[in-house]
Length: 627
Image (cartoon, rainbow, N blue to C red):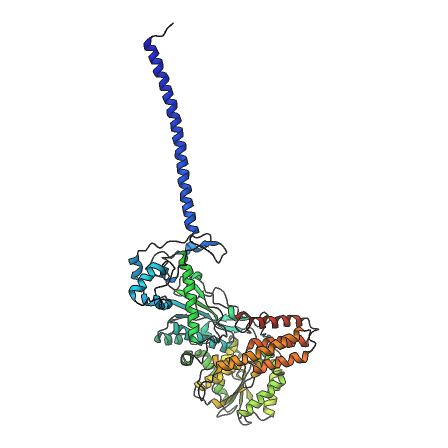
């Protein structure tokens, strides 16, 4: 049966409709697939772009060991400092992978806080390139300096340091830090006071072998801190009291004993990433310009590292952290500043009152009247190595008596003895023997010490350096004074007495030049200009240092040969000690001689290794410097 034409047309139309629907369905699915491919390709392209962009910024290791992409050409201090606010971004720096950010500030916004003169002070070499005006400096910064992270704004700098070890070593540390803060125009954070466990414990010049332990106490236990803050405020230097301590510096390693304070948002609180460390200053006797330049370089490097992460970071302050600053400054080169700074440090009033009581007791009819002489008797157990170098305890005592005769001590005048022998078992008997010898040779009418005039209630809460300060203040007023040459306590006391107007001849120091500290004291420890002006101590120090090093090397070589000629090693060691300029050479010679003399002793091998390490490091290496 044939279909009708109309039915055929209907069937044809229906079939075409089905084909159209099937085709549309296929097209729809194809479009969806195409769209997914396009979206995936786009996502991949974006990810690849970000990866390539990040990779081209260059890599640098972070302190935590993770990789961090940093801006090419090294962004420096100024870029971040040129912001006038904004997020500091500390939270994003706590760890993990941190992506550096681009600066979003416009050129006009950046230049509002740009100090072109400071920019050229930070980078003086730019003047050699003809950049010597505001317009040129701004142009250079926008075209080059900003991308490199250079600094074009004055920073608020907070100087932090460690003071150690004993009383006068701490005092020299404070003087040096005050001078540096004034030279840099920086604020200063005062460290805590330090005190030792005992004078009975052995002190070694080798790292890790000293039995002396150190703890901290409030700084006002030694100084009138309020008066110090007020005095320096008048001089234009902001001095801050000690903030909360996070970790006590390890004074057995003074060259790396950096301060550590709690980051609590206080006025001197600075995040660790903005704390610039200045290394290799302990005992280095640096000229002021060199020290300032080293500190400025550390600041620029530290802030530059921070700005590589966040160019628009607001940096309210930068800390300059120094380890123990003892003898870091050449006092001869900065004489005026050192002398002036030393005069601003006033001792704690309670300890001055106790010293006055001791003096009043000596001046009473019970003891004598008129005047008294004083001696710093540095023969405690912790100074045993000094005695050994000089030939033994008996030799040291004979030198003390000879110095007392030169100072015109006599049997009519009382003698005040400053010594820590009374602070530990066995020391009392030692002191009795010394007293008998002094009175027996007509060097004193009688011998007295602070414990005879102060009660146990007065002294039981005092730490070691407070007791030493009482002795210091009593000795400072004695008619004549005898001290121990290699001791900073004695050396500074003779300087201090001169500052107080006493004749230089009234202070005599026991000759200890064999120990090797005299040249360093004469350049880093002096407060008063000697008669006839300053000697050329730097040239003398360098010449003697070379000679002492040569003698030390000879001693080490002999000892390294198995100790077959111990006498030669000892002679070479003695030569180094007599030249007494480079402490490193002296210590190395001592270690070598000890090894040569004691081959049967298991410690001999250790001594030889120490000698070799010291000689290899040299005096310029703070990690190997004696303490």
